[in-house]
Length: 327
Image (cartoon, rainbow, N blue to C red; front, side):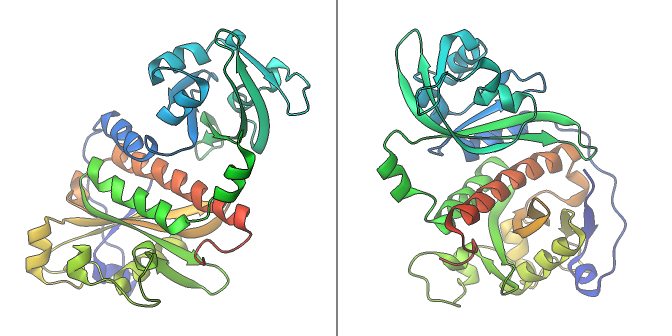
């Protein structure tokens, strides 16, 4: 995955610095921790499929929906289609090759398709709303696929709940990421295409006065709102991740040297949030890793999370019919 490495002054002036040699691959352990930190507490079921179409990941919500005692049991059982009986809400049976997991495994994309799934061994069943999509590399080759499912058996409750509090949801995601990666803080900046404005999720917290920024001491970050907008504009133009590195000659951001050293921040990572060619905003991390220590594997991990956040924002916009930055 290609990305830019610059100083803050370089971003301000539009001048690129040389990219340092990247560290060796750190393996997949970091990716697993990062994904788990974000996905384990969502109410939506999420299934990951490998390129052969077999279920390789199941989050706790999905395990509960299907009646499994653990994710591991679910992964083993989900690989045997004979365990389940599927039918449409009108009672028609769903052919095996048209089941949600089977379609996603072939790389087909679909959204909000309702299917009743019943376990033949236990009799447990529920009405689920399924969305499937493929994960592809830059050449278009399918690497894996993802299926999300929402239990809509209690339809009235589900409809009234919907995705009605996007800032709070993104706030939880942003707060979770620093726990599992080498970062002091994560913020998500949303872009409003209509007004062409950038709004940090931290400034959209319930009870915060409109237009009033959180104090830097409260946010425990060296990055100002001006910096966030500056970096977000840059990745909006390039559509590539950006690492802003800290040097004595070119300070990382507008904070004093003491704050940078106290927080242990060595770089700022800025990820563009894009869905179907639409720029949605950015995800910004104060990282305790230097640009030289950051590997391709680390960036691939963060880009995978960035795509997940982008999908959440895009789905919220589609469901509400409004800009995701306006409540």
